Amino acid sequence: MKPFLPQEVIRRKREGLVLRQDEIDAFIGALTDGSLSEGQAAAFAMAVYFRGLDWRECVDLTRAMIRSGETLDWSELDRPVLDKHSTGGVGDKVSLPLAAILAACGAAVPMISGRGLGHTGGTLDKLDAVPGYTTQPDASTFRDVVRSVGCAIIGQTDELAPADRRLYAIRDVTATVESTPLIVASILSKKVAAGLQGLVMDVKVGSGAFMSTLPEARSLAQALVDVSAGLGLRTRAVITDMNQVLGRTAGNALEVQEAVDYLAGRSREPRFHTVVVALAREALRLGGLAEDDAAAETLVLTMLDGGHAAATFDRMVAALGGPGDFTTTAHRHLPAAPYQLAVYPDVEGTIARIDVRTVGLCILKLGGGRRRAEERIDPAVGLSQMAGLGESVGSQRPLAIVHARREADARSVAELLRSACSLGVASTTPILYPSEDANSSLGWQKRELPRPADHRSQPSKV
Image (tube, rainbow, N blue to C red; front, side, top):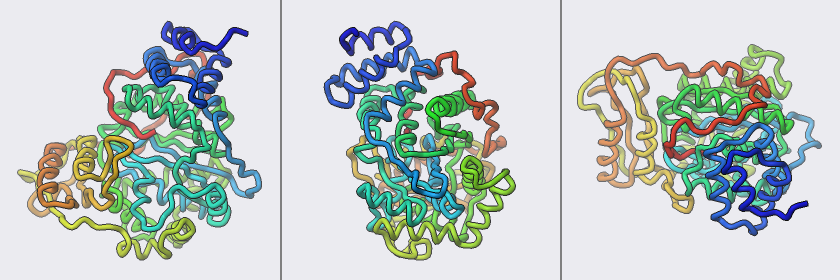
């Protein structure tokens, strides 16, 4: 057998050739043990960005990344092991209620989530706003909470898919985040390593999403479903709208409060509710916990309205070190920003368009997000009462309320928020998009995964 030369693998992919499994295995092995230089890893990522991978290459890459660390085994559980992943958006706090709903319905949900980067928020950043909640428990605690409660939302451990962690850090600083095959391998390596039996993908599309157009979103959804099939993981994809903030809040503590208000039944914003129910419905059917959509939706509403999902969330928070009865006491525990400013439009009218990425940048400017992975964030800042498309705004209805540490910060963000909202005649934007053939596996097995449609470098949570 020929000796392994990283530069030869890079050259072959640069020339558009199909990589063999042994080449991919050796390359990821070298990435994991540190014998591969950062420059070589960056060159490989750029070659894949421009040349793409075919289905078999992407399956092999993902499998090699899974094998770079440990895999979890939940075979002792008598319930299906399910999870959900989102490609990222502004105000996307769906994971918080969804994990509790699925667990209350009879699933085990070992949800390994990430932090936000760029304009998108991360689930772990939201949970960091909960006093005492441990997002990085030891493996034994994680297993115990999943067994006893049914769900646990934590961060990626050092043992799960360590090759992904190094490759993602390189992609983030080399403008190769947008590569579809690398996105697919990153997401699925962590999810398969977590020992899942079923996965629901929430692929966002719109001005606040990584995929700004429907064809791009469908292409990514198809790739995720097909590569999952090659790895033996049953996956369904749902394409959802990100042309406006999901729910009424953006910012970590504010989003946690909205999520627990949703679970407790105090308020349920319709678009947010639609997305939660749609993802839960797909997961329950994947796990064999409901025979059809109607039965799945009935089960979800029963768990919500009967308080079972809220009780499950409370048990999870308490088991991971947070306050007890959190869904009823969250307002006493979550941090609050000292200054609030209602932002009104210059003229009255109807919101016709929202540049959601700019709304996300408002959170960054307040200190509620991070531009670099090592930055600390302020969990208290953000936006509440965010107006949506088609809603009337004016002197009696603000665009949003800014929560800030200082008045100057709030006023600066107010101008940015006004620039993000255009008034006029609003077009109808669906909440859920038809996914066409994205859930029929192996639809593109013989062709390459697509390269990005253009070379924009919007950050993405993957």
